[in-house]
Image (tube, rainbow, N blue to C red; front, side, top):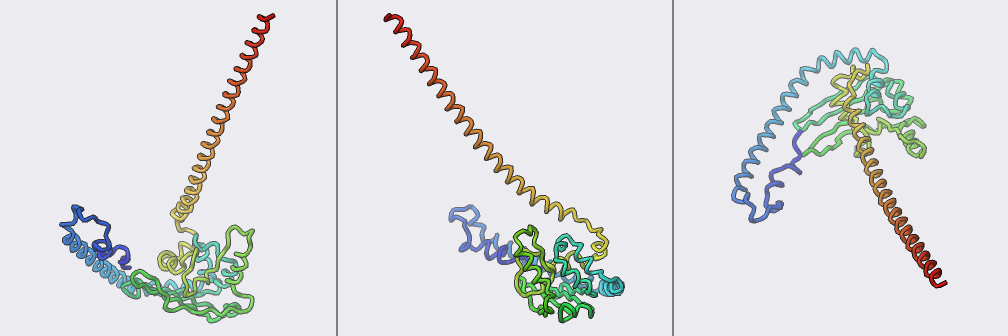
Length: 288
């Protein structure tokens, strides 16, 4: 895919109108040459991306007959895609209602790199048993990219049968305050709206699952990276908690020090009073 010109373009990085460079900066005399070089580099990056995409398309075409043979085997294995999808670590918390419907999924198809921007189309095809839950039996989502901005140009609208919508089950699940890990539905991805706080099903399929679904079906895929990311997230939280604990300890130490100082001052005052009383007693004895 193309680089995001909105952030890294030469126009934004070198135009004096958008720059924070001072008038006396030593780069000023070389600015024009610097800009020209950056533009040449960017043009080569664009050319490289186009050539890489063309090579990718060539090999995608060569893979098609193999994908078709693979699909013939998959269709003979009941529940293959249901088991494959739910075993991906990012998809393993979908609602149980999803699994019932995904068991009817007999074909999953990907058309990838449909243009130089990496647009793609994913198709879910279900058997007749799925009519118990929804219509139509073929769901399509077509995603395009323009200047790195995602746009959904086609998305099948699902018509759920009464009481069969897993998305409704998700809504009920999220309303349960006692549920610490609200589940979600994979069918929420079939929308033209941007999904918040949910895995991008399309990207997971095209980047990971599609290329080797057997490894996910068998549970052989290495999830160490996923676990590390998960652990790092909690390590960061632990570090923050430790910092808070350290701050609390420091505050406690300061309070203890203050208390000790007060105790010492009180002891000194008591000693002074005792000395004064002793002196008074001695004076009384002398007077007698």
